[in-house]
Image (cartoon, rainbow, N blue to C red; front, top):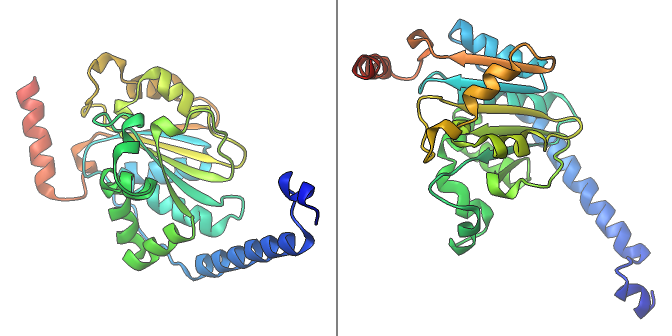
Length: 251
């Protein structure tokens, strides 16, 4: 190949074959790994069952739930099942709104994007590890089947063939939520998780979660699920007591 061709970024036949072999080998490894992965769980409440069915049957599912209701757990479980069972879903993308950290400040933190963002994604990683174990979760990340993206970095993208899980949606403004929801591309699903009672944004009226649950309820290809009954709390029974007590205080 000539120097001119190299300057233009063209690959030689040998280089092209090397790239193709790498991609084939990576895809083969991913397929083998996904076939060996087992994801088993049971819904413990009626509303958890509604959430599961909504994720399976809709392109976008919007969830507001109390702490301990299993919304993140079910979102992660269904995402794993989908990338295992349906070839059109190639990966899982985790998106989180971090009110304490602006997008431009991530650059000042040490490490790559995963290392910068890991401390804020403990709930996701914990749930993946509960479902498939620590080593398999690590392998999924190494293969690029689980990816992490700060909300600030999603703007302008079209996200295809992906299960997108959005956390802390109650801290996303209406403008940012519109930007985020319109990133969904071909053969993708989006699960938007939050708790309307746990808003950390400066102006709580700017929160989009209640608005989108109200506006997209009963719209085709959307599912809106609420896990707000204390009976939906399945983590630790003491959480139910805490929630009920604070509800009385706030009345």
